[in-house]
Amino acid sequence: MPESHALRRERLRTAVAASEADAALITSLVNVRYLTGLASSNAALLLPADGPPVLATDSRYLLAAERDCPDLTLLNARNVEPALADVARERGVRRLGFEAQEMTVERHAALAQAGDLELIPLGEMVEALRVTKDEEEIALLARACAITGTAFDQVAPKIRAGMTERELAVLIERAMVDAGAEKPAFDTIVASGPNGAIPHHAPGARQFEAGDMITIDCGARYGGYHADMTRTVVLGPPADWQREIYTLVATAQQAGIDAAVPGVAAADVDAVARDLIKAAGHGEHFGHGLGHGVGLEIHEAPQLGVAKPGTLGDRVPITVEPGVYLPGMGGVRIEDTLVVRSGAGPAASRQLLTTTKIVPPGELLVL
Image (cartoon, rainbow, N blue to C red):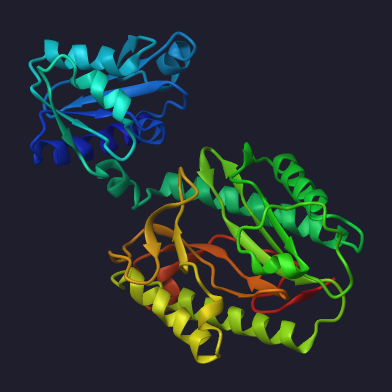
């Protein structure tokens, strides 16, 4: 709704006013969408510390901007950044904040060429605002997660020997779209047999065989918001080593979920799960972080990992996704998306968004 976007802009305006900049030039397309509601491939926002904001986009998106951003001054321009820099000059802006994490050297040089604007890096100012989600965002994220779980439940019983990793990935992505997704949130990962030891294996032509563990990492995008879920299943009766590492990962994941409460350090949540895996002798087989924030991007702040900064707060969606990966043999990863919430007691401090009816919590699905 326009009102929520206006509130977001006001929060950013307060941060800009407290900085050294007179105005902010927002060029990250994700951040422009967050602040205005406009989804496009060419847009930028000028947000003065004092005065009305201006949204620039070109004729391909102008009608959409008029529809979705009725409370904003619109500027029809193909080269949105120089056009907004001109507006900033006309308004007497001398110190223009920019998103250094997103802007290329070439674009920065073009803005600086005139020499009458002092360009000041803002840091990830908008990303910091995006960490805490409002209830509308959480509802969109919950819908994306529900679509993901529905698609997995529909497709998992169809897994059989002889099917390829790529065939399964396509089935899942099609099922998500059929269930209401805009598109997959990311390229689906299907890693079978020894490929399961590669956390981000790209699904290929390998055919499933009896005894394979199969890791499936998938997510739907809905309303611009990204779901992220991983399940590991086994084709036929599991070997002892497979059941052992699955139980370990499931236990570590639940420990991480239990630790995710408001006020806890992100690194401490990671440590709770990681220490269990280390104690079982598999510390070297868990190399990535425990999880990450999700929202308009599939990977957002906060990051749950060794020495990662920050603490968790109210209404912060995160993933919890420990794994154990054994080279030449296979691996297990289990991932769910949840929202950290303030509440009475540990159970009230978390809202689990991803669910799959076909896989009970902590249990290995045998196909």
